Structures are given as C-alpha cells and as structure tokens.
Image 1 (tube, rainbow, N blue to C red):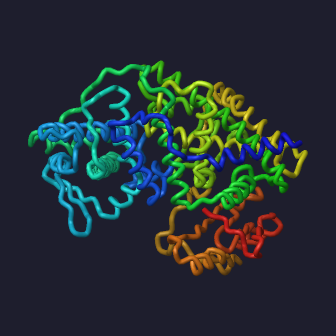
Image 2: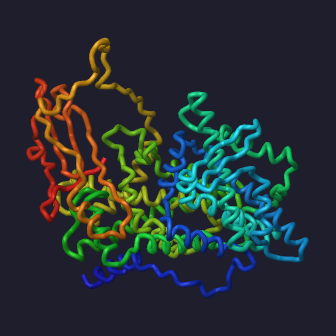
Image 3: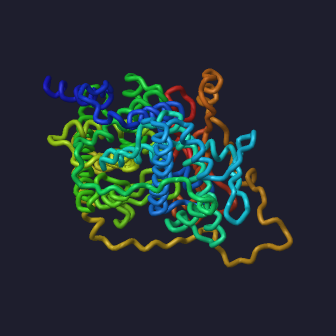
Length: 577
C-alpha cells in the first residue's frame, strides 16, 4: 500500500507542480526574435487571459455573425503569415541599407501604412479605404474585442518559426515595438476581411464563410495598395525538408512553458485551490459521479485518469508526426491536426462549441460535452500541463515541431478528450452500479473504450436527422388580436429570474473582481410523455420544473423530480443556460 501512495502522490505533483525553470542548454533560438515573441504572447495573455482555441473560434465566428469554415480559418492563417513575412522582409531591406542587423519600429511603421489605407479617430474607430471608393468602419469596441486574443502574435511567431526551420536568414531580429506594429496591422487587416466576408455571406444568404470568400475579402483590401505600387517584398519560398535539423519540438516546449505561466498569472492559481476545484469539477461537471472522499481514493482516480489521457495524447502525437511526414511538411500544421483528430476522436462541434463525440452512433451512445465542461477543465491550464508530461515521458523526441496554431488545436483536443474520459467513466460507474463512488478502474475502462467507440463510429452509417418543431401548426395566425397573451399568473408559474445570493455577496465583498453575470434559462419539452409541453426554469433561484396539466395550468414538481439542489450554505444551487 505504501508503494501505491507514493505513486499517486507523484502523479498529483506531476499534474500541478510542473517546474518552469529555464533550460540550461544552449539557446536553440539565438539570433532570432522567437523568445521575444513568446515573451510578448506570455505578457499579453497574462493580462488578457490565455484564450483557448474554443473561445478564440467563438469570437471570430460571431464577431460579425457568420461562422468561418475550417478552410476559411486555414486561409486566414496563410494570408496573415504572408502579410507579416512581407512586412518583415521589406523592413529588413530598409535596415540593411542603413547597415543595421535588427529592424526597428521606424522601419516597419511606414510599411504598415502602405499596406492598409486607414484613418483612426480620437475615439479609436478606424475607417479603411476600399477599392470601390467606399469606406469600411471598424468600431473601437470591435477592435478592442478582437485584439484581446493573440491571433496575430501567433502568426508572427509562426513566421519566425518557419524561417528557423527552413534555415532562412532573411528575417533579422525585430524589436518588441516592431512586433507590436505587425500585430496591430494584422489584427486590423483580418478584422476588416472578416467584416467584408460577412457582408458577402449575408447578401448571398450563406450560413458560413468559405475559404474562397475570405480570400476575396482579404484581397479586396490589397487592391488599393497594389494600384499604388506594392512596397512589400513578397515572401521568399525556401525549399524545406521533412527532417528539420532541430528535434524535440523546441517551439512547442516553449509555447507550453509560456501558456502555463500565463494561465497561472491570469487565474491566480495556487496549489490548494487548484486541487480543491479540480476534484469538485470531476464529480460536478465532468464525470457527474461522486469522487472518493479519502485522499488515497481520490489520488488513485487521478492517477488512472493521467494514465488514460496520456495514452490518448501519445496516440495523437504519433499520428500527427506520421501524417506530417507523409505530407512532406517540415512542421505539424493546423489542417493536419484537424484531420487526425477526426480520425482518432470523431466529433462534431456546434456554433456554441459544444462537442458531440462519435456522432454516427445512436444518440444513446454519443457523448455531448457542453462548452463549459471544457472551459472548467482549461481554466487550470491542465491541458498544456498534460501535453508537457506526455512530451517529457517520450523515449524519443518528436521528429517534427508543431506550429503555434497546431499547438493550440492539440491543446483543445487534449481538453476535450480529458473531459470525455471522465464522462465515459461516469457512465460506466452508473451502469455498473457496483460502487457509489468513482473508481480508478472506471477511468481505465473509459480510456480503453475510446478506440472501440471510434472504430464503431467509423463503420456506422451517418445518422439521418429529422427536425420537428413542437410549435409548428397549420392554424392561421390571428389578424385582429395580439399573438401572445401574458398568462403567467393564471398558469401558477411563480419563478423569477434573479442573480444568485452567493454571486451578489461576491460582487459586494470583492470589488476587485471583474463584472460577473448569472445566466438564467428555460427549456420547454414534454418531460413526462403526456404530449403536453412542460417547463424547466434555471437561474439564480435554483431549478424549478413545472408539469403542464393540459388545462392551462402548471404544477411545481421540482422536489419530486430530485432537482431541488441546495448548496452547503443553504442557498439554491445555480444552474446556468
């Protein structure tokens, strides 16, 4: 038993106590700006939150309302990198003419003004000149929101990484102000392209933004520049090998280090609170099954989870390496991660970033993970820590590094699959009903189930989906009276949406906290199968379930339904959405 204790305690330390000390060996990035760019990302995300891939995707999708396809997002990255590389090389030419080996913001700033014709008002709004003589308005609010994610800094990092991996010497070091200037131009250019592509999608009644549509919008912003004489040098195409000189994924390792530091800084994580929240989230959100109450039992469950998730991360990494080599790529890039992730862990992601795993299987064998399930896992930076553990455990280093966008996707898949393992374990525990507590064996069985479910999903035919609206009717709409009448009181519905007591106290006592909200919601469905639509309310007052009596009224059956949850302090538990 003593051996078991040592093992599980070591596991917990490896999850939450990863050291971030600097490497002692020679700096593989000497002479480049890579460390400076990584430092800029770390400082940026420590202040603005290390936005995960899902959050970044949601913001881009709903910045103007039209979601991007994967193809559009990949094209966006390609065009961003071309723009940055052109700026960088043109600035290098200017610096070289003055005999300097490092570019400054004075070299870059004139080029950014030539790359995009715009004016900024005192309020921060930006107006961009278009080829047809019209102007596109980007509000200060839109710019601030879009710039809160390190999209463009990742593109700058990717350009530097490409130059290092190819052995190119035409990208001299850039000072921090130069990097920031390139970041700002790229943010403005991308935001403007998103706005134009969204406008086209609306005019043509298309639900999504395609790759070609985004390219058209991007190029429309460059027409005026080309007409005036392009001052940007085009990116130099350098022959690359699928076997780069540096092994061991040095850029990925550095990204992980900076990400963990940013999560710790922004979320102000400490060991005690991290342990407590992680354990609470297992039974409350992820597994939805009670955790062992003893430290020993709890640590054994966590050890089994680590075993299961590291197997999946290793599978992902090995498949990514093979796919990139087969494609002749010098790096693992985002499109490869997207394809391999579907092969190993088939899933669908909806507009709200809820994820359904094994979507071809019957609904009872699918696993729906809601966006906040993964959010509550990512808050710890745990997905990056697990990738680091997997890298450190490898017998041989990775052959190919990952670019920054591929790294973000790998981290996103790690968070999704981690929650999936807990969710499957919770269902196994529920089905087995041999213990009232989650066990290590449940987690190990969950890990073993994933490849089997993936194989079943691959051989299953696509599900046919039919959508029936309960509100659909052939009855004519009234023409001489209001469509709706307030019957709340007559129907005996007394629920009131309000903020929760604990959240109100938090706002009053912790003035330093940012603005918070209490999300209420309502679901309408026939819960008891009598063909009458019932109502479930959730919010700061807790849960209330009303059954429709078919006579115009509703009965409160919350307590009988078993959802009258109360916190330890006696206040109603707060369900959201």
